[in-house]
Image (cartoon, rainbow, N blue to C red; front, side, top):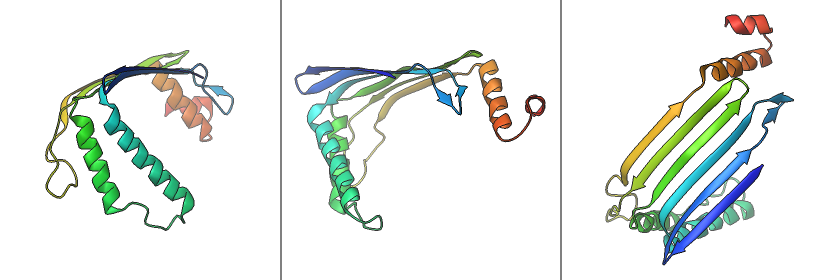
Length: 169
């Protein structure tokens, strides 16, 4: 597994890229190929992002220190989340997956995503957003047919079918 993170600060805004590669994915000694992901983000407000990360860390700490039945999320937490998200949207951030690739001996499949967000006001209650924060969204998915057929056959075989039965199904 190889991971690289690039982070750039421009005033209070963050831009960066995450590359993550799994060179060999094996399940039950079966080689399922390799997976790579490149994710790019830009125009993230660092202060708003830190507020959301702190909220997440507080909730995780509460979940560790309390019983599973405890009511861990308060109304104040929810309002803090929506306020933090509204603040994050003010800088019109973007997120892209360029691409997520899965390669096996039978072929390669890819997923790409491009998104841009826009500022949205909060309703008077402070809960939720008053509109749709997505200004642009596009995605593409390419699936290798031989790869898909091979993975499905392997799955059917793992459920107890013979290789010949898997090809018929």
